[in-house]
Image (cartoon, rainbow, N blue to C red):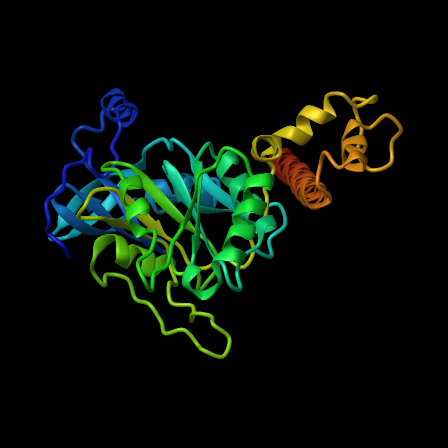
Length: 360
């Protein structure tokens, strides 16, 4: 295990965490941040270096869901019981959590990472570029109160005219979000991105497989610390190399969380993310004739009126409607799941009560 010394504030430890530590009598435990997770085994970074950890039995058995257990980016209280080995006693409160709808599991969420300051949304401009997907990533960032930043990579693969057209489209559809362009191959644009990375701040890389996230980390550090695969010239796509989430502390300052490429980024039940991403549509909705307007065929719908007048683009409207339906479906699924769980719990209590009566 690495024995490099770190300052805990440089790892992102904030005042509210320090207060929680003292208020909950955790001073006798070592403070660490989860940098890697595999099932219920964790690598935790402390001021003294990396420690391989497992969960205390009580923490494992009292967790009501997977979200109650540590995730990459979490702060934990641990006890070392051997050289480079420890037991996680407690998880500190999260400032935020970046999550998506769990793939193939209706009504369940998957934590991407915790305690993040910025979401770096990376797309390659030649094949991966999709403004609808950008809005999707921005929505999950907004839902977690994380500031999104867009990075359009591989600009060496297209002509300047095509890049200008993309930037114009992004500028019309997406407001008040920083957009950077770069090339991992030539290094163009990298000097504008490096100053974004500040000591003690946490940045989570988001994007599909092969867009250059791991190569970007190597470019930022000036070292080959992340594995990258060669690009197939035939299809111009990178092989899927990153297979797990990993928190990396850069020597130049700043903390980056690398993620496996995500094919699906399902919206969860938070409406706040949609409201921030599609603010102009929600402002129009306030002018609709009916409070429960669905913005589909109602007379007096301000959203449809703006669409007809060309004040709202059809592409923005269609993507908004798609994400809103997805969010509503997830919320309904969660509600139904909770209803079934409640009914099952009630049935178990009745069975236990009947058993006591029969024994009596």
